[in-house]
Length: 201
Image (cartoon, rainbow, N blue to C red; front, side, top):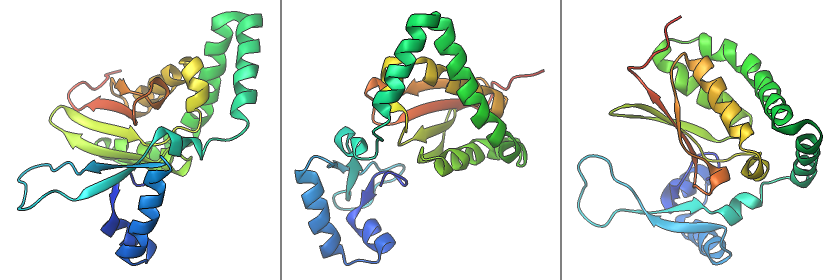
C-alpha cells in the first residue's frame, strides 16, 4: 500500500496471492494497531450499483514504521548547520542534495515525450522510495508521493521540500505548484503540473 496507494482487500489478495479472508484478517489487525485506516473508495465518473468498496490506506503511524533511525541524526546535523551557517547554508545543502537526484532523473525524464514526463519522474521517484503516481485532471497532471523518506526532517526544515519543488519544475519544463506535503501533516505530497503553463526558454 505504501507503493501503490490505498487498496481494496480484493486487490491486495490478488497482488499478494492470498485469499481475501486471509488478507482481511491482516487488515483488521493493522487497522486495530493504527497502521492502516479504512476509507470509502472514491469513484470517478459514473458510479455503479451498491456501496463503493472499502479501501485501506496507510496512516502516519504506519509511515513511521518505514522511517529510519538516522532521521534524528539528520535533524541534529541540519540544526547545527543552521546555527553555524544560518538559513542560507541549509538552503544550499537542500539544493545540493536535490541536485544529485535531478542529475540522475534528467536522462529518464528527457528520454520520453513532454506529456509522458510526469509519469517518468514519478517512476524515478518510486525507485528511490517515494511511492509516486500520476493522475490527470482538468487543469493538468497531479503527481502524488505516497511516502517521503525525509518527512520527519522536512517537518523542521521545509527547505528540502522547496528545493524538490524547484527541481520538479526544471525537470518537467513547467511551472509546478505544491498543493500538499506529508511533512506538513497531509496524507500525501501532491504537486500540480499545469498542462498550459510550460516554461519557454
